[in-house]
Structures are given as C-alpha cells and as structure tokens.
Image 1 (spheres, rainbow, N blue to C red):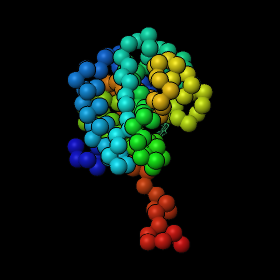
Image 2: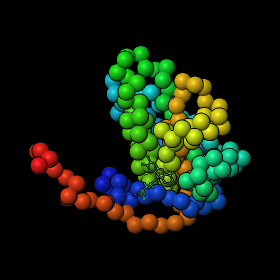
Image 3: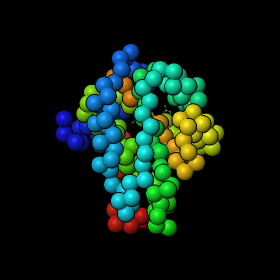
Length: 171
Ligand SMILES: Cc1cc2nc3c(=O)[nH]c(=O)nc-3n(C[C@H](O)[C@H](O)[C@H](O)COP(=O)(O)O)c2cc1C
C-alpha cells in the first residue's frame, strides 16, 4: 500500500474482533506516534496504553461516544511540565494530534482498526479520564484511541472538496 492509499484506507472502526492486539504491534504504534513533528521538538506527549478488559469497560462507561468493543486503547496526553519555553504550552494540542494521526495511519499498515475519541476540551470527559487513568494534574488527556482488529469494512476514500480549497488568497 502506498502512503496515499494508507491515508485513504484509514477509517473510524467501531466494531472489533474479539482478539487482543499483540504488545509488539502496540509498541510499533507508539514508535510511529513518537516520530511525529512537534513545536520546537518539545515532544510534550505521553501515552497510557490500556489492554485490561476491566479498564476498557470503565472507559466505555465513561465516554458517551465511545461504547465500542475494542480490546485496547491508547490515551494520548500532553505533559505540561515539558513546557519550559513560554510558547511551548500553546502547541501541545497540535503536537499530540500529530502523534495521534501517526498512530491511526500506522495501525492501517499493521492491519488494525482505530477510532479517535475526543476528550479535551470537554471538561467532564477530561475530569473522568484523569481520575480513571490516575493522571497527575500536569498530564492532560487529549483523546483516547481505540485499537483492535476490525470486524467491519469501510471503503477507502478521500472527502476531497475543491470548494474548501483557496489558491494563493481566499477571495
Ligand atoms: C477530535 C475528534 C474527536 C472524535 N471523537 C469521536 C468520538 O467521540 N466517537 C466516535 O465514534 N468518533 C469520534 N471521532 C471520529 C469521527 O467521527 C470520524 O473521524 C469522522 O466521522 C470521519 O470518519 P472516518 O474517520 O471514517 O474518516 C472523532 C474524530 C476526531 C478528529
């Protein structure tokens, strides 16, 4: 698969096989995450990997829009203690989103399905996930990515819309 084909093949998967994800594959996803660009190369990310059914069930009951049967999840977090430069704190969301997208694309390459579940900036989700994952105050959860072997097929596609593209200037 070319990189463009991989990008089009990435779809949100909400039905998973009842099969665990190998630790090695989860580690490959984390390596892909940490290959992402970040402002000033601060790499403010930290990840909590969840594979235990009890914890997955707790996440499912916590996230109203995340009630899918994935066997594993990766919580992508920003660690504010890495923000030594005054500008650094402004970019942690973008940095962690770049890492997130790398995980989603790497998963396609490994035959895995994923779905990105938004946590930040919804206060109630942030509060519940912080408590559940026992995150210290300086570690902010951005999202949860469900990971597993897909039990549904979705067509590869772009959603290219030329009306959203402005060449040179907007007008
Ligand atoms: C910031 C963000 C938050 C999202 N939150 C959820 C969510 O809570 N639950 C869910 O099922 N999908 C969630 N999604 C996935 C989107 O619904 C999905 O990407 C979109 O419908 C396009 O479909 P595709 O991913 O198959 O291309 C989220 C995606 C992003 C980028």
